[in-house]
Amino acid sequence: MVQHLIDTERVFQYRAVCFARKDKTNLPGFDENLFSSNADAETRNKKDLIYEFEVVLQSGSLLFQSFTEEQLQSSGIANGKEVYVEGMGFIMLGHVLHHIGVLKERYL
Image 1 (cartoon, rainbow, N blue to C red):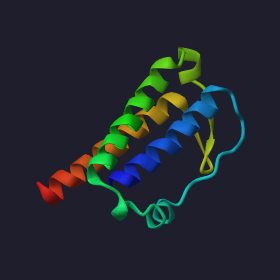
Image 2: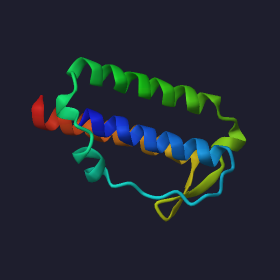
Image 3: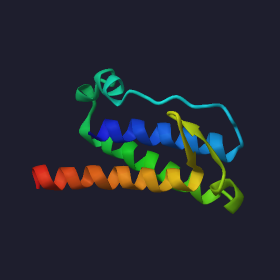
Image 4: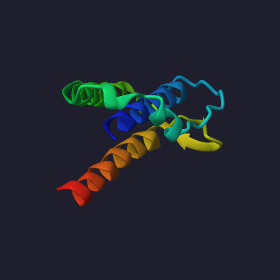
């Protein structure tokens, strides 16, 4: 699940920076199951995965802090749907919170 969160954060961050920079390219969706089956996460050290996740989250936070109000209101098409940069930030937070909830529900 941690590798899934890392991959998804990176995809969403890329989308956000493209839209903030006024790139009007329609960005594709991504197959999270394909990503997962090709990540080889089971070969990774748990400590390294968690550290990488922390760094990716910090990177996303710094990215969003760097956006101007105009950039936050920029939009683009990802996976066939229009999305605003600011909305991407909420989607990213919600995605992480969703998986934290899953972990708590199933394992804690």
